[in-house]
Amino acid sequence: MTELDNPLVALNDVLDVTQAIARERELTKQLSIIAQAARKMASAEACCVYLLDKTHRFLVPATRIGELIDHSKINLANISVTNIKATDLVEIVVYCAITGQLVNVENIYKYTGFNFQEFYLNDQITGLRTQSLLALPLADREGGCAGVLTLFNHKLHEKDGIKGFPLDLENLMRGVAAIAAISISNSLLFNEKQLLLKQQEELNASLIVENQQLKGRIYKTLQLDKIIGRGPAMEKVFGLIDKVASSTATIFLTGETGTGKELFAATIHENSPVREGKFVAQNCAAFPPDLLESEMFGYKKGAFSGANTDKKGLVEEAHLGTLFLDEIGEMPLPLQSKVLRVLQEGEVRPLGSNQTIKVQVRIIAATNRSLVDMVKEGTFREDLYYRLNVFPIALPSLRERKHDIPALTHYFIDKYAKQYGKKIKQLEPKVLDTFQTYSFPGNVRELQNIVERAVILMGEGNVFSYDILPQELKEKVEPGGEGDAITMNSSSLKDMVGHYEATVIKSKLKENHGNQSFTARQLGVSRRALVDKISRYNLRG
Image 1 (cartoon, rainbow, N blue to C red):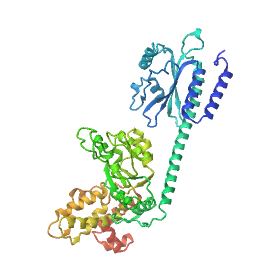
Image 2 (image 1 turned 120 degrees about the vertical axis):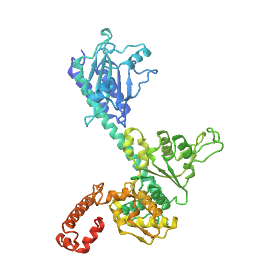
Image 3 (image 1 turned 120 degrees about the horizontal axis):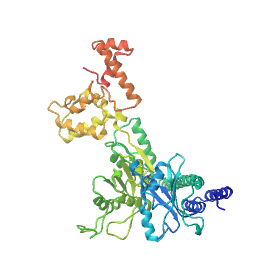
Image 4 (image 1 turned 30 degrees about the vertical axis):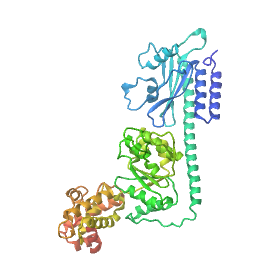
């Protein structure tokens, strides 16, 4: 009598495997229990469980049992599940994972619907024969697929020989696959939670030690002289810097291009316990991979052609100081593992050396890209991302701190007037009105470049005038141009209300032929308030 003939036997087996899985927290042991139980209940010669990796790009053979596939010479490969079209579903496990459909093949040597070449090659290696195959998707909570359970060669008794898996066995194995999927999902969530808790404990322990070391610190006030800006967005950033200033925790700066990430990194260094050490900055996008590796980690004499002397890398140069890694998202994967070692073990190995060097360095990383998306795409290491993202600080765009534009403008005018020997006695108000209206996609760096260019173009009048601003800038902010008196690139409520207010004032002024006093009375505001709004929204003329 088989399990199919006796439902009670099958039910007991399902209960046994459920309890066995529930008692086991370790994923690899759970998978072994699942594979053994599925093989027994299906009377299969072999079983393999494929799991979807963290990037959701590959199905990885996580466990396998049975001589058909568990052989020292058989290397089951990861199977890609990205960019798969309906016409490309020739791999049976990929088909199961993507469609969520069970597949039951009686004889793989006679069935032409899938690519079984890997199994044919395995049979040549083992001298055995794979015939029948049953593949079941492991559906997760969200209805997606966590992996695929595959069973090979249904065989109840030696005298029966190999047969196809019976149709009435499918429902039982679907139930086993459902239990397995829930167990795997729970285990993955548990492991992820444990990892996060461990990282939090390590961070807490590190902060406790650092706080104890810094109790007698005299340097308590932040030195922010190099950063211009005191509005709400900047005060939030300064508050975060103040909280992290007394530690050496790893900091992760994010923000658009041109927001001044290196300046902020240098400021953090100058307010930190390692301020007496060097501040070493490296743009990871500025060098090709091979050169970046030697630049960061150094090399020994003879390590490669042209290495005539030993060279100390930037990581070692920053010992007892700060290493700023700008555009960390551009760093190649092989180098990412070396940076991870610096963070985890505090050691570096130069090219051509078989010895490691201990370093104590505070790392500040920065990027204008989404590392979360890069982790999902498999182009950035997940473990390195969590190591870097200890204390994230998001830098505001210039659009979020428009009240700082006048101070920044005057600062850059003074800087470049001195640099180019110009005497600037006046700044036309229309210039600031234009800057307040423009969206500055290039942020502070773009403002700096615009001011520098304008100072160079200035004539003998000593006036920083609207006329010397770039034409493309004026076209984007002039009435009727892109944005029409206020940038429409912003989606904030404040900017949308401002745009509506500017439109109403402009319409009323047109109706009243420019009469500001009459327009002010119609709108219920003072003439002075109206004049201020006309200036703010650049509605003159």
